[in-house]
Length: 408
Ligand code: ADP
Ligand code: ASP
Ligand code: MG
Image (cartoon, rainbow, N blue to C red; front, side):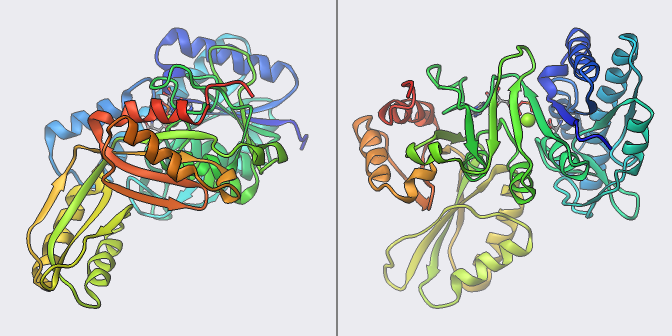
């Protein structure tokens, strides 16, 4: 097989209406006519996935997750079919497939299924016939023929996994911005496009709220060394290459600032201050697949202490069920929640070798009179929980303080 296979993924905004679908078709056809084999992954049109979820909410507050997957997977089936038609209109041959049809095998964790394998034989067969192959993003199928989805933003994962399975030359992610920026350009107008970013930094930025790439897709890209080119579907300019660390990256201490708004803080009051209590609470949360983010335990008073932690909002109902029953069992007090929080983070590989990043971030927020409620750090990031109402201002001033807007 020739090594000029390219995977191109188009996000929801790139296929939001018939005009845009036709433009995407033209772009795919141009790539094909340059002599490449092309596999296209598409997301659902515009905000379709959100609209489908809103519909479900009108029917049930607690819908079975299997049925949510059945519902959400319909979105991508619409876009692949329309794109195939648009490409045929331009005189190239194309064929669309659902995830199930091309053997995107997953486990049975509905709404956030994990990939097990991709059986790409059917894709290869169709490429061999000279067709453009279009695959529905975000969806898969279990061994028992149940339809699953890969978590929000999951079309990125479909694209990266296909690029790996087909040994594509490059995986192009077309979206509504020109690449990966030093901060969300919608929040920080002076944000600067990065020419390259390492897998590690992109993984942190994505996990910390930079929705331009789904975090899980970067995890897979790093593991299998799949280079990703994030670029605009509206211009032909070069975007951002996500790749292994390159030397020049080490010179920048901070690469980006991110904002995560869908966090909630949970506090368990009066937890008995003795060994094993935290273990019980967090073991039970882990068993329910709840990802706990920041944890803080207050200073003990009279043999009891308050424990606070953050989770993503979508995990809040499950978290509260577990936390309330655990609190009762261990003799702790009430469990309260706070949805008025957000997480602001700075990310950069250079933090491994430079100190003072946290201090500068805290000083910047102090100057702005923004209170920091929780802090966590890793080798390449510092995160703070602040009031949601102040979060965007925090992002802008931190971005400015680290000089990220300047051309290097
Ligand atoms: P798609 O529908 O193409 O998958 P998404 O909405 O998932 O697009 O991701 C693109 C959006 O990500 C942009 O419109 C931008 O507002 C947001 N974003 C957040 N952080 C960043 C960042 N650091 N760089 C670029 N875009 C970002
Ligand atoms: N349509 C899905 C979502 O909105 C998948 C994606 O866009 O990547 O999450
Ligand atoms: Mg996306």
